[in-house]
Length: 269
Image (cartoon, rainbow, N blue to C red; front, side, top):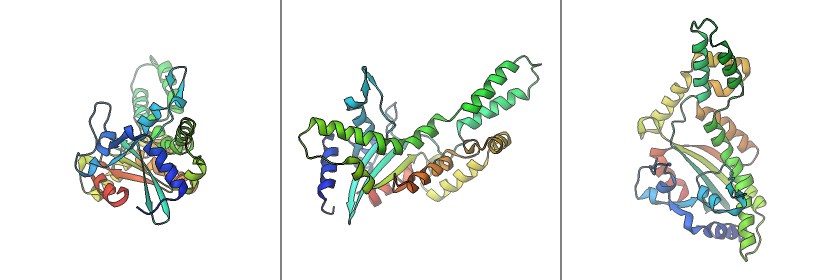
């Protein structure tokens, strides 16, 4: 790795202070049941820092004994190449992001109830569901959209301030440093049928995202609600473009779980 500047060395020292959370990629990618979305291999033994665990260890996110952590990416890593210092934010998601949002599923259920002959027996319930639909927003989509934003603007600055307060180190203007670094955000999700061929998987995802019920398309046009007629991946791309334009991240995108080995080899090492 190219020699680090003084500020870069301070940032690396900051991350290395959490060495207890320096874990293999396949471990960071485990779900609540301990099952990893990454195929275990010598490559996925590649270690990064488990950012969620770092957050959970910080007192700054605890209020009255309750943990209030920001929405952070699962992992963080760094690399110096030439004059550029890269910070990689990696989110492992054990879902198929080419699927439609759950909001469309809710709309389909409500539409089905409206088309059944219940003789106005559930008119109140349907009216209530219509109000829920109007305010509903998909939790998974919101979480994935917020993660890079909250990681860069909330989590890392607050974690660093606690680190600085508890250690005899020279101060780093962490916000300025993050703004000057090239931050790469990648969402690693499950590919369709775990196919290794990225192109087949992507083409299938586009076909899947086009298979949207007409009632969802109609409501999306009426309410200008893109969440109703797009896949998770397509909706997230809109957020990613905004973050790139705003300079919050340098690059944002997606990686299939079966091709993450290649991403490690080509970008992280």
